[in-house]
Length: 320
Image 1 (tube, rainbow, N blue to C red):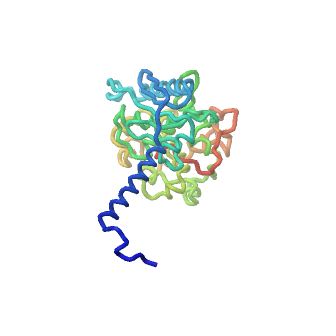
Image 2: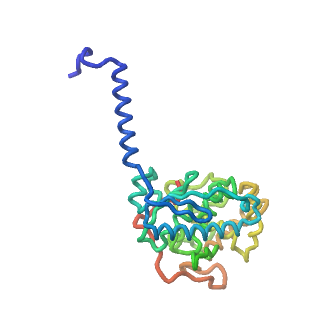
Image 3: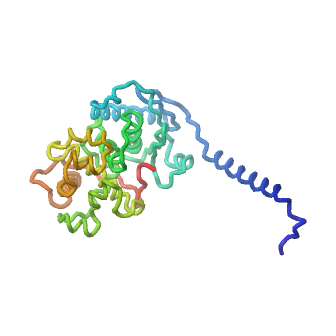
């Protein structure tokens, strides 16, 4: 039964009650998501807020220093890279549970939102650093190099550097660590060896769609596929055909990595697409010994352990 009008509070009072309830809900959510670091760590180029163990924080600090060195060496010709800058900021969470509680990130395992890179330390991972490395490249692209990049180039650079092998405190750029995202999904990419067939059946996204961000399949449903494409294309530009494109990458990025600048610096999309496809097949062979090698040499070989894939079939993309 509907209450008589005289029992209901006046409209201004009802609105005040509703507004108070809304503030209470928002306040409780803020309290639930509140995060406070247990310690901080300053390195030469980074300021880290952390709730992870101190030795874990130091490990991330050292590996981010390796990333910084590799990035500044790779882009040493950029004038902004050599300029003094404020320390880059990181937030390192104790574990995935804390990270998810404190951030509205859905399935994402890490993200960069200026001025902070956010990631957690996962002691169960073979490479507990690779999420932070990936976000760190986004940060360097934005805050150090001041590059304005489309998704394929921004994510491609982050994948290329973030999935490079860390050894003896040095990031071996271009030497791919298969125990990192998105590389651990490369072995499930069913390439037939026929470019046109794989374009038709959706195994391969057309290069034009990758470069323009239009005309490809749904990103929400196929983000693993997109990340593999962005990474492998970037890998080809730096390391394909004995590095024939390496010197052209920086001018391409400085011009915004558009379709037009790509064709100006790298070549016609259709020709490069065929070359990229063969490079992708070669990467599969080099890292997982899958299919036939795209060339007669055996490649660098893979690691001796299985890739540490998450349980879910579609893990979160490294960036939100």
